[in-house]
Structures are given as structure tokens and as C-alpha cells.
Amino acid sequence: MKKVLPYLSNAIKSAKSKGVWGHYDIPIFSVSTMHEFNQLVGYVKYLNASNGTVLYRGQPKDWGALKPSGNRENGCVSSELISALAKDKDFRRYLGLDSYEISGWKKYQEIIISAVLQHYGANTSCMDFVDNHWCALWFGIYSFDSCTQSYIRREDKESSLYIYLYLADTNCASVHGIYLGEDTYTVDLRKALPSYFLRPASQHGWVVCGNDVEHSKDYAGNVLCVIEVKVGDAYMAGVHLCAGRESGVFVLADDCFGGGSGGGTVWDREIPYPAQADRCGAGGCIVSAGDDGFRHVSGGESGDVLPLAGGCIFLYGIG
Image (cartoon, rainbow, N blue to C red; front, side, top):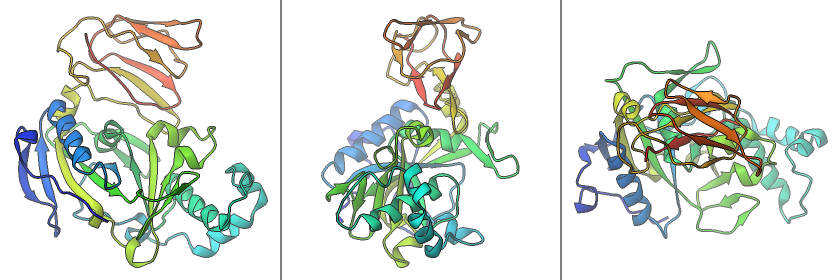
């Protein structure tokens, strides 16, 4: 699969090169503003527009590789278990896997089951990604606490988070959100699962699985670049973002859409999930229900937070 690695040019001159990542000849950059972050992400997508789909993975630490949990921790979900789940009628029905009559569908069923197990925390040979770089940023800001089984916001603003831009092999025919690439299977969970699975939709979730043992050991080979961001710089940009698996927050951000900084009123925009509260933050933004079934926000200041159902991440620019 062809891929084009980004290097410093006039297009991304504001980003700072930090050399190469790990043992790979892959560039790593540091950015200090969300303008630089957006610019670099856009440049990488532009360079690889014809090569596949650029996905993102955010991590609070850089391990110098992208090894799946099944290769990093004790045990990995067995192929026997996946086959057994694929034979379970109730389980297939719950995942919506009995609604299609496609040649070779059993193989696709097992791929979806592997992807679902990975997305919901099982140790597999697959790896989670998202197609929204703001979601990836959130996963770098928050660390998963295995004791409480929850995400905890990092408070050390001088520490770094890392965003990996990964080129998924999607230049092939897809079946129900599954792309059978040369070395990997790529799954868009929002297409592969019924809409009552809120978490994949909230997180813009994708999963990549190697199609053999060798290609499941480390996914670093398809990384286009790594972006380092200081946690404090992400906070300064208003990227407090949503927390949790099935719940979220709406954040008023002062510069995420290229608007000005400081106070003011937010752009009135629709929130496509019902709000759980009618006011938020010290800025006192007002949430009102519209006749269209959506909630609408007006007023408020940068940094105001509004809880939402559904777990979606929303960044609101100050006008």
C-alpha cells in the first residue's frame, strides 16, 4: 500500500520536527496550538487522499510501537472463542449479524466480533482507532484506570500526549463497513453495528485487525507521523472534551474552529443529542429545546461545560 510521509514544508512550517519515531523512519512533530494541530492533520490527509483513510489514535504515553493489547498483556481472545460466538444465534442477533445474505458472510461475522471485543476492552490482536482527531486528542488527555475501570483526566499540564496518524487500507471494496485490505481488515464500527451501540458512534470508532499473525504484532508500519502535544496546550485550546463511555460533555472552546479568543457568545448550533442539563458553567450558557427535537445553545464563555447523553464530543467556537 502506498503512503506519503509528511515532512516540514511551507504547508506545516509552524510545527516543530522532533526527528523520527522509535525504530521507524516516521517523522514526529510537536505542536503548541490547535491551529498547528489542524494544519498538520489536514496536510497529512491531503498527501494521502488517494492512498486510503487516515485514522487517529491518541495515547497518554508513547511506547515506540503500536502493539495490540493481546500482544502486550496476559492472554488474547482465542479464535475458538470468536468462532463459538459467531455460532451463537442470540449473540449474532444482538450484533445485527443475521440481517445479511452475502457470500462469505461467516468470515465477515468473525471480523466484526473481533472488532467489537477489541472496542469494548477485550485483549485481542486488533487495535482501536478513530476518524476524528479531536476524539484522539481526548484519549491522550485522559488515562484509563484499570482499578476503577474509568478514564481519569491528566492534571500534569507539562506532560505530553501523542497522536498517531495511521493510514488504513480502505482502497478496496467494503462490505457492511468492513474493508479487506492486503495485510489488514479495517472495520468502521458505525457501519458494522446497529445504531443502538452508542459508544462506537460517540467515539467515531474504527478497528484494524491484521489478517495473519505477522501483521497483528505491530501496526506501526502504516503510521504516517506522530504528533506530540502538551496536555496544558490542549487545555488552553478548550479541549476538555467528553468523558466516559456512554456519556459526554459539550465544551465551549475559544479557538478550535479558527475563531477569535476570549469571551463572547457561541455560535448557535444544533446539538444532535438530548442535553441532560439546561444551563452550564459560570458563563451561564442557555440550552433551549427546539421544535426540531434538538437542543440549542446560546450565550456562555469559553470553557463552559454541558453534559450530554450519548458521549459525543463537541467543540464550540467563540464568535
